[in-house]
Length: 148
Image 1 (cartoon, rainbow, N blue to C red):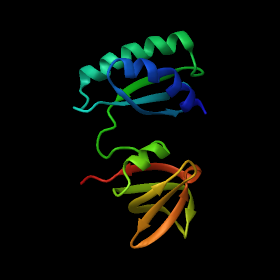
Image 2 (cartoon, rainbow, N blue to C red):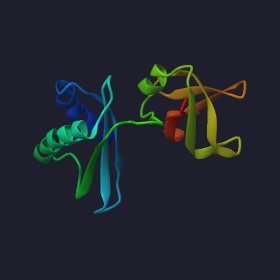
Image 3 (tube, one colour):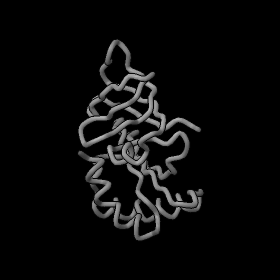
Image 4 (cartoon, rainbow, N blue to C red):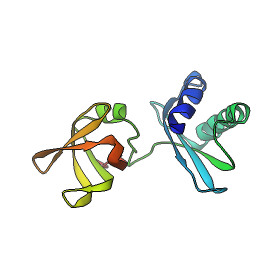
């Protein structure tokens, strides 16, 4: 997957700068495509941090050129509500509340709110109103932690 390839390429550089690569999203929209890189650090991310990472990442992407065609690069903090982009994020936040949106409906709905019970490489288990429900990661379009 393109996002995985990009993360593998960028992770060493971003970590050597003192940041955590939270993840990336590639939104293919022809010549208006967007590559969004999320970075974080313990004491938070500011505009200067995003600019610094953007310069380094841009140079690296220009050399290796893993993204096809034209695209815009955006470097951002994961912010609040924090997006969950992989099963390790879900594992980090077991016990926290999350909103998820699905590609295909489950029990007639595509949007769920619940508490993260567990996650592995394939699925997420949420406590939704006292009932544990399983969701395949391949069916999750978007997930965000809720604001406490």
